Image (cartoon, rainbow, N blue to C red; front, side, top):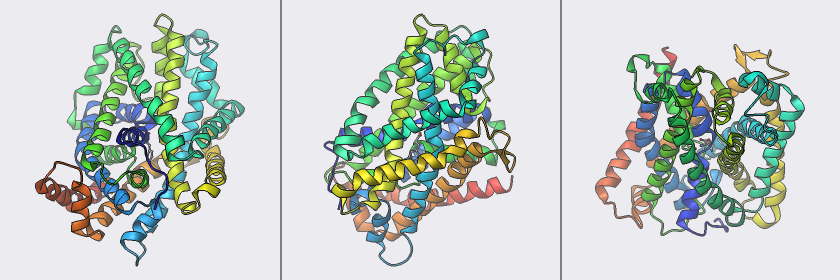
Length: 446
Ligand code: PHE
């Protein structure tokens, strides 16, 4: 039984939305949409988020709140025999791997932030923004120290626990993120030539859709909602019994969609206005945003602020990834073990992230199956481990928990009725797992 709890529903929603909204939405979604054809990808992503994503999010909430336990125990509690707790272990491994490359990008943000104080970012020599990204990522010391700094910031918050650490940090960071994003959308849409980008982003060209597009969109939907890792199971285990789960889940989904829209509307108009290519890959926002801010009065100040907010978004997701690994390891001995375990886990993740970090510099020639380490690890996590985790959770929750438990947990404190419950149960039992399997097969079939 968790001893630390969220102080309020808002605290929980912001923390869960904080986990959801992160690099996946502001950095990964735009560049993946950029390489996968834009609007069609975004549309599929939205549909998946609203259907399969929200259903699964609710399933993770139900499991966590019912058992009041984190990644491993939640499964053991429901099914004491069998090996179901391996879903939790898989989630912990996935979180470990995910944060190892995620924190590298967190490091880039810090490196840009530090450089932006001297105005070097928004007006690089010769106006060459790609070269700046290369200079920064090619220097192992600069990105190494920034990467470490990112992990230390994460550790410093998580070691303080749920209420005093994660919740307290998130309730300031998330609202700030929304406000600045709104300012940026306005600026980006008023650029000359912005419309072409809006069209690219919002007009679906369905002829570009392949099995690969579907799988990538599904992986992205899970990634964006932090699903398949038991992060949401862990976070909801700290939630009071009377809170309304469907409403909380919808709030998280809506907030994620809102930010995904805003991120697209900031990035694609700028890409087209500045004649850049939308399929530039992981460095997309790091070359685009400085160019956009370079055009604004006091641009470097805005850029610095924006990087701070990106940092917030990234940190609030990193908190959840460390928490899910730490929680089972300190269970029952929170007071004595939290600090030490958080440092151990956090620093191990940092060390594991070093090859990802160097794959844009020193190790850029080192290819595994034809691509750099960073991209392969991202592929493994987002397109394989997350969908597998999601599949297992979608089998576990509706088939292993009793129907009465599910119904009671889902509807408590909610004004939804039994028909909502039946629809949810049908979707999680049949549609979610079948969709995941079909998408997998369609990818294998090419
Ligand atoms: N949802 C986060 C993002 O979009 C990433 C994440 C995935 C966090 C899985 C936790 C678990 O950036």
